[in-house]
Amino acid sequence: MKILVVYYSMYGHIHRMAEAVAEGAGSVPGAVVEMRRVPETLPQEVLEKMAAVEAQKAFAHVPICTVAELGAADAVIFGTPTRFGNMCGQVRQFLDATGGLWMSGALVGKVGSVFASSATQHGGQESTILSFHTTLLHQGMVIVGAPYTIKELMNMAEITGGSPYGAGTLAGSRGDRQVSANELAIARAQGRHVAGIAAKLAAK
Ligand SMILES: Cc1cc2nc3c(=O)[nH]c(=O)nc-3n(C[C@H](O)[C@H](O)[C@H](O)COP(=O)(O)O)c2cc1C
Image (cartoon, rainbow, N blue to C red; front, side, top):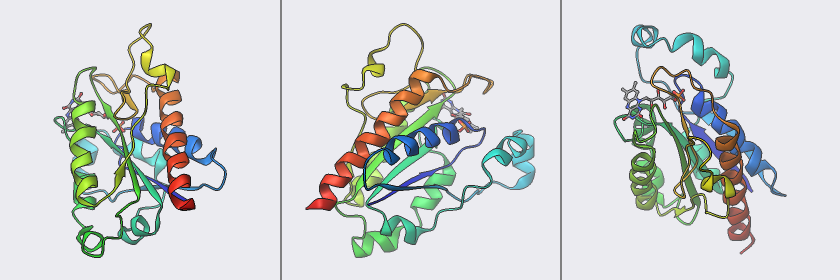
């Protein structure tokens, strides 16, 4: 059973969350988990102005995803930073290259799941995940979130990302907030939950 964690990260928050999602998915017997990045679309000059170049070096070793790899997976867990309440353009562009998978129905019946990161507490994590689901539904994917049996979703003792739609983290307005232990626990649980459902579907 192949699980792909496919993401874009500019400053590392989504990368850190992707590691936790992959760890959780990998804890399910029979799951083979791979992490992949979507291709960068911004010019180097812009990335430099956005102070992203140094940050991105930390995860430059993660291979770039191909569309064919999506088709070969049993489940795909996508990660994206919020951009104006939506997925980022890099992920959008990657998904817009999956028309061939749509034509052949290659993703129909496979599990799709999403996690996100935003600068601020109400900056659009939930709208990012829910609007992402539209694309997954067009591809015929079976959408899986992060159920409330994950007790960290109920944590009111601190500010935390994450909702039943999927794990999330808050980067802070300057991007200097680190992913919290609570958010990582939700991310691991989402990965585990997705892989568990994918295993049941694969057994049929
Ligand atoms: C063009 C742009 C738009 C953004 N839009 C939002 C937004 O709508 N809400 C929000 O809270 N943060 C927004 N952010 C902040 C990013 O979501 C934040 O930098 C990101 O979640 C950090 O994740 P990363 O470290 O994985 O790149 C935006 C950032 C950029 C560059």
